Image 1 (cartoon, rainbow, N blue to C red):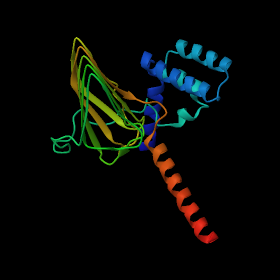
Image 2 (image 1 turned 180 degrees about the vertical axis):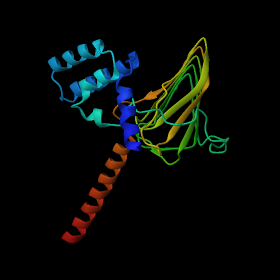
Image 3 (image 1 turned 30 degrees about the horizontal axis):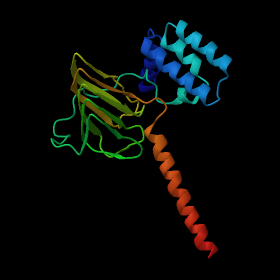
Image 4 (image 1 turned 90 degrees about the vertical axis):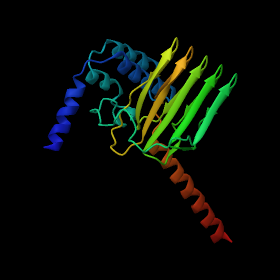
Length: 234
């Protein structure tokens, strides 16, 4: 019965009318495939033309069916039950990390451990928080983003859930809602406000938590193997 329900949900999702955001997502995947050499320039142009003419989500999927990105957790999966606010008591009041940019820039990216609460303040400056290769040790992460005549840019892996609540005063506060297909995936919550500035949070296409874990595991395995070989040689 559960399998029948899941199959029916996928069919229903494929029949949904495609949005501009859906087309942008497929176009991004095709652009990356062109850069990686998976598609020729002619194939890329032909598929992009088809994407622009597609009317349903199912029609869009056809253009990436033979690409690795098509086998990642689908953005069209049925919506999960992730709440729009963190579980009471799950997030501490005090921040684990502060990022401040006053007439300057502050960047946090690469492999780093994301705390449960991160505060970012951009005043006539810019803050970049890139979680696409971060290590998530907590199920829920809260980012408090405040921009005054500045910008806060947040990027997350594709296979986490993303929620946002905030507003802008003569500015923009934009959070792309994202639902992971994995029930135990981390949830990133973004709140705050922008005054004559911008706050933007969205997924970084092609970046997955599992990819990083795999690379770390392989790296450790190679180091252990190399150490054993050196020991045996001696």
